[in-house]
Amino acid sequence: MPRLFQINTTIGRGSTGKIAELISILAREVGWDCFIAHGSRFIGDSEMYSFQVGGTLDENCHYFVSRVFDRHGLGSCSATKKLIEHLDEVKPDVVHIHNIHGYYANYKKMFKYLAEKGIPTVMTMHDFWLMTGHCAYINKSCGKWETGCGNCPRLKEYPAAFFDRAKKNWWLKKELFEGFDKDKLVIVPVSYWLEGFAKRSLLQNCHFDVIQNGVDVKLFKPYEGEYSELWKRIDWSKSTIITVADRWTDANGFHDILALSQLLPKDMQIVMVGLNDQQLQGLPEKIVGIGHTDNVQQLIELYTSADVLFNSSTEVTFGLVTAEAMACGTPAIVFKNTAGEEIINDETGFAIADIKEIPSLVRKCRENAASYKMDCRERIVENFDSVKQYSKYITLYNELLKAGR
Image (cartoon, rainbow, N blue to C red; front, side, top):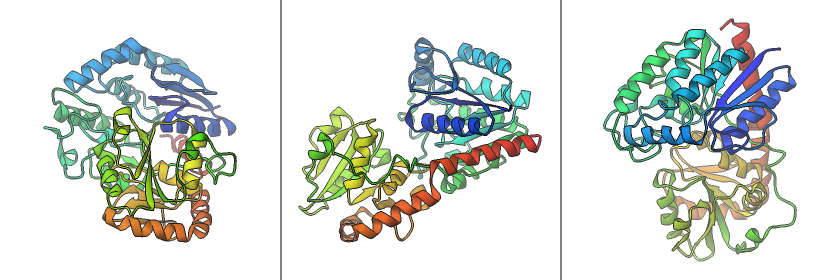
């Protein structure tokens, strides 16, 4: 029985934690023995054999060296040594790394171990961190990630630091990736848009295999049950734009949403999900603010009832909220030249260059709600069903083993 060992910041919760869990479930169904290693902060329910990398004290120490010295992913030496010892015991046939950043593991030690052992390795790019000297998301006006970082313009953003070590980090990553046997490493961007950036980065000599993210279409579907008190707080007689984020910053469009609210007529509103306590204070009258929620039913209610989903991020590497809303029958608006354009088509959404285009598109969506509902759900079911998408990883694992990689 082949053995799959996945490594991720979280287990059983959050987008990447749930992806790793579903991959393990699908792999186990076809005969793989599955293990997941994870950090100590974000732990949900899991059916898999799990291994916690370090503890709270270790992650706090890692946070300190990252926050002060810009050494993110270079702490947790002892915890990573124990992880490597565990890998030696498990003897996996394939190691699959999701987010190795997150203050819990030492990527230098981990990558050197995998390269020296020649273990077939898959690394999913859920963000840009693997290809930069600092940033998890890139500023399109900054091209330093192509030739060597330094004087990082986003040093104060995750993983925020006081001293700038971006140049050294970039060259270290380049050296480590060059140390892999190219036939035993596959980089998996979660969109073709992301692959375009990766192929111009320090990863350019790696082998790529794009596997787009997926949505649980049995869970995310048009809501037909009894509505919650949260839903009842909202005046659904108004044309409604929903926009959702885990946390709102300028990087993913917080101020774009505020600006959009000023363009809307009186019969339109924005339902903005994921705001922190400070952001919830003093919102414009046309924005209904909702804090972060892990309540999936509430999200499905909101997705289903809104006239359109607006994904304001220009840096998101796929756009799960876009696909989730569409699975619930709601069309989407995304910015041009983003990963969101891969999710929509002419029958299910719009790619815009300017937020001024949005009010007229909202009216169009409301007037043609029935046709959008059918087309949107059909597109996600056919192209972004999570079972179909994540089964592609099993195919990739088997190809690595068959090729002797």
